[in-house]
Length: 291
Image (cartoon, rainbow, N blue to C red; front, side):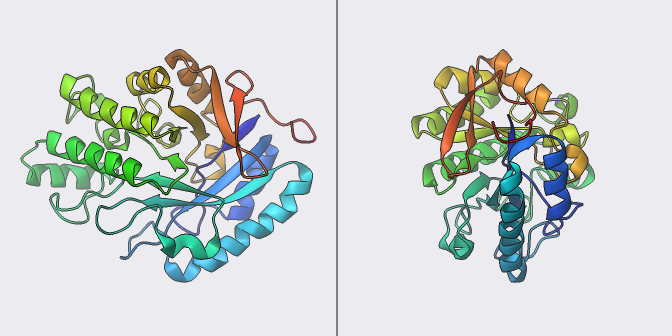
């Protein structure tokens, strides 16, 4: 069974229409596809959906769901909602108007760090400029990132934790910090432990692989292993911004999950309920009707 609950379209920073993404997922043999446009924020960015488009986004996804459900592809309406301390959170009532099937909670922004527009996944040159303003001390960044992620986990209001260690995106080759360092791992593992304690579900995200930004999944193998040891449930997220991203690295994600010790993964079914599936059953294309 192929499934993913992290899909972007041209309603935000995706490069294809929702219809094209749905068609591509069907052609690839998906059984379940969750759309997650970057939710509107209290301020304007170049990648979040605008508030005025929220209703059209919802109606578009619901319409596609009615078209594809009879053919064996369940489409779910979701949002990727930022957690920015004191400003916005995945559980905010502002998003209730479209009654999303699920909410993907993510941390991109770090407030009061270099400037209020600091994002951990920004282009490398901008990230480098921000790091220069911090004197090159990346520990400030990853400490605040995991503090914010833990605060989001404790606040709740989401169904899936997005790209758990996104803070590593600009750290290829350990340019800014040591991901194997004791202090970094302690911060990441603390967030994992809290998520497990609260019964959360995290995604294994292949977006960085698909766009050539990193050479591993989010999260990294050591964090995945900690998740498995603590019993933190795991689902799949392509973080697809184009049809070519759909499923391209799911075999790598499933292999990483197995290597970490996972025996099963979780998916949201057509009744909007979480179900468990053996890890060896994941990634198998739909044949005819739904499995």
